[in-house]
Image 1 (cartoon, rainbow, N blue to C red):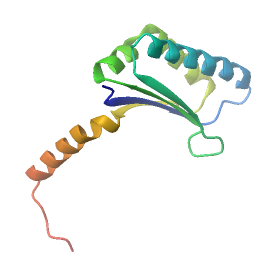
Image 2: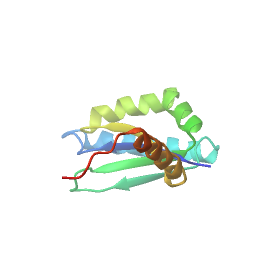
Image 3: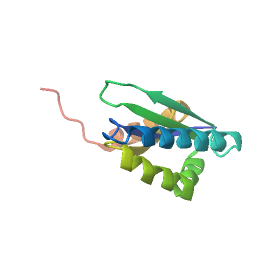
Image 4: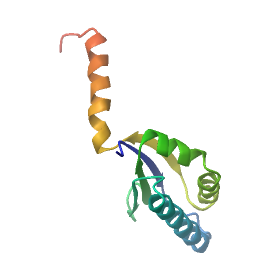
Length: 121
């Protein structure tokens, strides 16, 4: 069950790199589709948000082990290297997806239980 996500976000395309950025984007989509077809991830979502704080993102859904394996994959690393040349502010963050939220909230609740509470002002 996919309880984690790998979120790749970026801002605007570097000026003069627009055509190559489309090649990198399409290559990434093809690669992620292949990961989904072979069961290496559960699914992925591509999101474009032009004229927003973030211009686009890819969300890869899978287990922690699946996403760790993807991050270590040479092809994934190559796509990241190419993307870093054509977009600004490329970021990769792993987080909890919908089915992983209860686990994350449980850890937070445990941490709260160990934290001395102070009176509200």
